[in-house]
Image 1 (cartoon, rainbow, N blue to C red):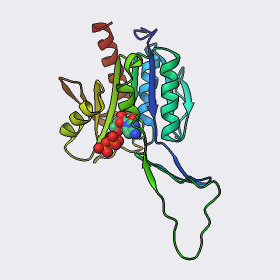
Image 2: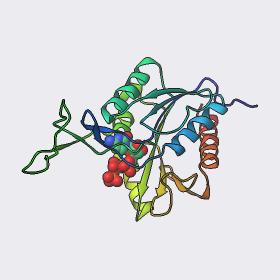
Image 3: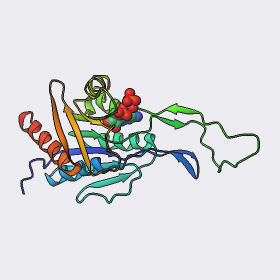
Image 4: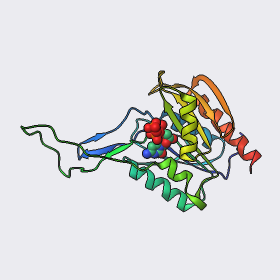
Length: 222
Ligand code: CTP
């Protein structure tokens, strides 16, 4: 098979993050990781050297992909930064559903139920990994791709996210339809000056299509 991405280094985040409340509890979300894992597989199949930084999911690591397991957003960010510091990364794809907030006052022991009320959780904002990677100066990957999960105004929200975060492409996802945990997805790929709709199809086919786009990009901009 043709391996047009051989020699290209890719970092992909996928899945949810898990933000601890205490040693036995945490905050997380419904991301299955399926779309990110499919992208990792599609790029590895084209010869890319892929590192997948994954939150907790119920999926096997794709063939030929190096997986780093993380839980919290801060760990995910550290793993991505370590990867970028270790070697020059060509493509970063941030598909993870990173928790926007984490618990500030994580309890060291299990919080016990006590008469007189429920504990208060104080939340603080997590770092924005996509924005940080997009603004990483000399280490910035040549191509930085984000995702935008929106329930309304997909085009306007995705375009705003593209410029706010400083990435190159955004995969816009209409999550008012059945997406979470599903094997199918419908997206719009936004670049700085174009938009392309991809009708509902398997996450594997979406991934292959994105991989083709990336291949074409590097043919045009070696
Ligand atoms: N993202 C990230 N780090 C965060 C939050 C988001 O890397 N702390 C990335 C996601 O992986 C995705 C993109 O940013 O590629 C958009 O995530 P989304 O949750 O849709 O955007 P938010 O920044 O949370 O914006 P909003 O709450 O306005 O939708």
